[in-house]
Structure formats: structure tokens, C-alpha cells
Length: 342
Ligand code: PBG
Image 1 (cartoon, rainbow, N blue to C red):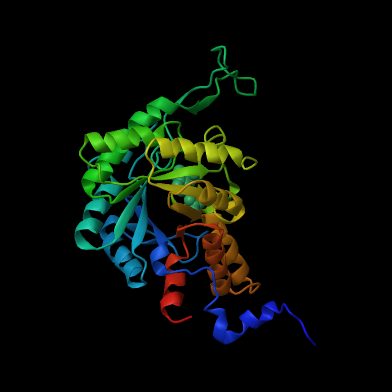
Image 2: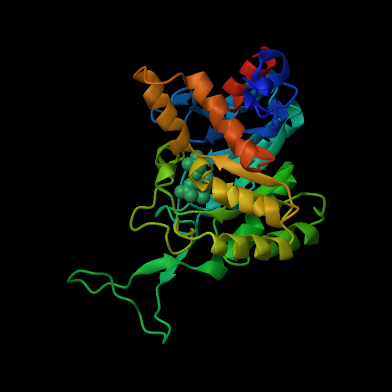
């Protein structure tokens, strides 16, 4: 049989590697790590098998374990010892992230990125201090129900002031990069000028540029104790229906000086990853979130799929879509698989 086109020629074992279009390296991965000021012991996170909240005293060991796998960067999340309406422990000199940062940066070689948000620090669990929601004519929006109480929403501009304090406190404690994640208007610009004014012009910003209001954050909210106590985040995080809006968000962040553009979640939003890759020349990061991790873990636990293969394929697909960097709870396991000669 004379077939001109036989694509299978290039799928033979000895040539597959040569024509492979995408590669995944441990250095592409960022491992999220949870540090908890309320405990002296490691606490397993039930909805994220294999992950734990570690006490401040255990953070250096935890980060060393990440580095041993070949992963070079971590994203640090903190659970503070106490919460209040403003989230003031987020910028405390002796706050959980600040303490952890000083130890990790002085005792390890990890590249440390900090998540900059207030939802783990406010007692109501929203990503900033609250204000009454107003209609365009200035009248107060009342919540449903007989009490006629005002509806509350996050105060954008008050949150920006808090973010300025947080990033400067993180940079002082040694953060290598900061990642504002609250989806507040103007957040990248204020973070950039706050860092510059404090002398941290070399600290880059990874913006959670296109962060969607997603059901896939569920397990994380258990892990970091950051679920909103009422309502949801749809007044600040993006509507999953929108993709042109993501380009607008990224453009604004680019104008305000973001160095790296992140999309979150990853797998349900690969169209957004690839659109940003095409339209912008910034490095693109994708956050393979807690729900994406928990789904595969749960299916594997039932024996319904092979965890290692499914995780590797997921991360490879995120890179193929155009991501340069991937934040993932699979970072350590996949990196070990990669360096183990898979
Ligand atoms: C903080 C933040 C969240 C995540 C990362 N940073 C929670 C949220 O927006 O509710 C989610 C990460 C994950 O699900 O893995 N704003």
C-alpha cells in the first residue's frame, strides 16, 4: 500500500522524543506551601491528600523537602493566629508569613513567592475590608430577607491601602516575588509603587491577572481557612463566562507593571492561557488549583485512574496551552517522577 502521509512514522519509540513539541521540567513548577501560626504540629489537609499545614518551626524542613525534588520555587500561604475585620495580621511585622519568610530565605535557597491577599486574615473571609454596597445612584442595596440589612461588598480602595502595607512587609522579610491575588482594580499599580518607594524595585510582581470565581477553590478554602462567611466572590473575581474580559484584565496589569501574568484555575481555562500567550509577551503562569488536584486524587483513590499519569498529562497540557510556569500541588510528585527518568 502506497500512502504518502503516514503520521504514525513519527510516533515510533525512537523518534517520538525528537519530535515532541512540549517539555516539562521541575524548574517550571511552583509548589504551594501552607504555614500555620495556630499549631505546633503538622496538620494534614483532608481534602488535599499529601498536603499539610506546617507550623512556623517546621517551615524550613518543609521547604527543604520541596527543593530535594528539584522544584526551586514555592508559593507561601499563611494561616494567622487571629483574624479581624481588616485582616491586620496580614501586614504584621511578626505575622505568620513574615516570620516564615525570614526563616526560609535565610536558611534555604528556595525562590519564595508570597500570595498577597486578605481572605485568610479577615474574620469574614473576604479579600478585603467591607463596605455597604451602593447602587449607581448612591442608595444602599439591601440584602434579601425581612431585616433590610445593607448588602456588604469588598471596599476596593481601602483594600489597595492594605495591599501596599502587605507587600512592603513581605519584601522586608525577604520575599523574592509577590503575587497579589485579590482581583482588586488597580492592585498591580499600587503594589508596584509601594515596592518601589520602599526600595524594592527589583522585586517582581506575578499578578493573578485572570482569576475566575471558581468552584474549584473549595479544598483550598479548607486548607487555608479562607472561605467567605457569607456570599461569594463574584463581585471581584471574574465570571467564568468571559474571555475577552480576561484580555482586558491582563492589559491593565501589563500597563501597571506586572511582570508575570497568571491564569487561575488552569485546566478549565486553557483557552485563556493560550489567548494570553498569543497576545502578550509576558511569561504566563497557570494555577492548577486545589479542586483540580482533589479531583484526580479522589478518582485515583477509587482506582479509576492512574494518578501519576493523569497528573503528568495535566501539567503537560497546561504547558502545551502556553503556560511557562505552573503552580501545582503535584509539583513535588511530578518533579520526582521527571528526575527519576520517566
Ligand atoms: C486567595 C487565594 C485563593 C486561592 C489562591 N489564593 C482562594 C480564593 O480565591 O478563594 C485558591 C487556590 C487553590 O484553590 O488552590 N485569594
